[in-house]
Amino acid sequence: MLKLALTPRWLGALLLALLMSTGFMLLSKWQLGSADSGQINADPGKEVVKPLRDVADPQDPVLQSEADSMVQASGHYVENSSRLVEGRVNDGTKGYWVVSQFRLDSDAASEGQDYSVPVARGFTTDNDTQALSPEPSGDVTVIGRLVANEAPVTSKDTKTKGALGSAATAQLTNIWDTPLYAGTVAAVSESPAGETSPVDADGHVDKDAGLAEPHDKLSRIHTEQVVDHSVDWLNIFYAIEWVVFALFAIYLWWRMLADSHERMIHPEKYYEILPAGEGNMFYEESTGRYFYYDADDRQYYYFDEPVAEETDEPDGGHASADASVGTAHENQRGDQGGR
Image (tube, one colour):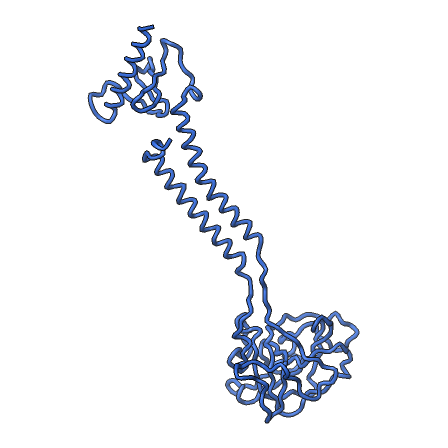
């Protein structure tokens, strides 16, 4: 079978099968890459505190590369601007965020426009909006994690007056009637003007950082970077399918080669042998191939080649085959005469 496999016909078929298998394996690799393309890993660089204006631009969407970054902003809280945002969980406890308008100082202004940013000052389980602690007065430096913007959601809490379903800047900008950054800062530190911000030499917030007074009934919001290590199993199954196709292409070539070799070695299993006088089967020892003589066409035919090979050509590509066929035929006749 190796001799047959090394013929140009089967080498070309093998090359085609290998090209198809290579394409299928590349598709499998692409599917594997897509399976975890949606994963989000923690970025140590986002834990370093940076000025808000260096991370995000006013009114521009907060991108995934910017979300969850630790930022710092200076300004002052707008009095009586606090709102409760429902559906929040802090250390396993359900409750509310207290979100207030934080107007940035002139250094953070853009083209003469004063911007504000929503700041989640803390977490509370009390839904009494009248009992909210007032916003810290005076200039304050806020350090917190920049949370990506949320879509507006209608509040399901009918018992809490003024509660919001989400911290959507599209809704808050209408409530406060001011342009906002497209994201919320979850505060982890508030420092009154004149005090040093609790940031170490590496740019990380000190663990003992806290909120400015007053912060009655408010707990510091514990936030971490959003990570996602999930895998899309549908892409995994697709990748396995492409591997199966690649293996099947090689197997199909081998199976067709084996069948062709089997027909050459045992043509009696695949062809109907004509009775004596109408046609006879012969074996050509030099090539190991079977052939027969068609009395009507007066030509010899190989079983594994549908094209007739004429025996009366004086030269050319069929000369050696015709000689072999003639010799085998004479041997066959001699054997019959001996019997």
